[in-house]
Image 1 (cartoon, helix red, strand yellow):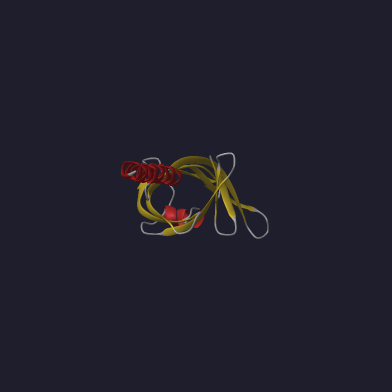
Image 2: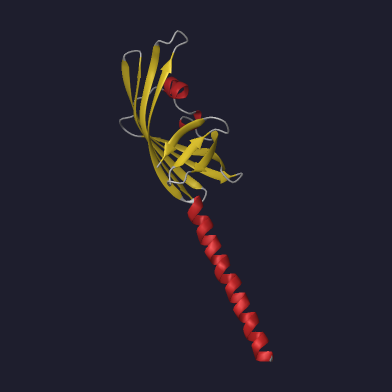
Length: 160
């Protein structure tokens, strides 16, 4: 009888440890992901004339509270075309179920990036232009595996 109780306790402990490990692996897998998005933004003046056009590819990596956002593309403004080629390194925290706070730790400009600072600050997210700037993202996991990046109220883009 004593052996049966001891055996039952050992099996129970092993079961709890096993399922605990499965949960931790699953949770870590949810918080680590990569995705990409092709984005075009058309900026208009108040009289509906075109002001600028931003075409870019963004590739995100989230892994254990560290991440990177590689941005490539170009910005056309006032009949001039500027190349965007930068990598934003960031730390992130998950404040709620789908809510993330990203803080830029470094901005690495590629050799082709010729976007002036004033235009970058106007047309890119401030997070992409200055170290220590932060941004808040809500990331909704969609049924098809894609992710919808948004503010708390407005969608930004779909990342797959």
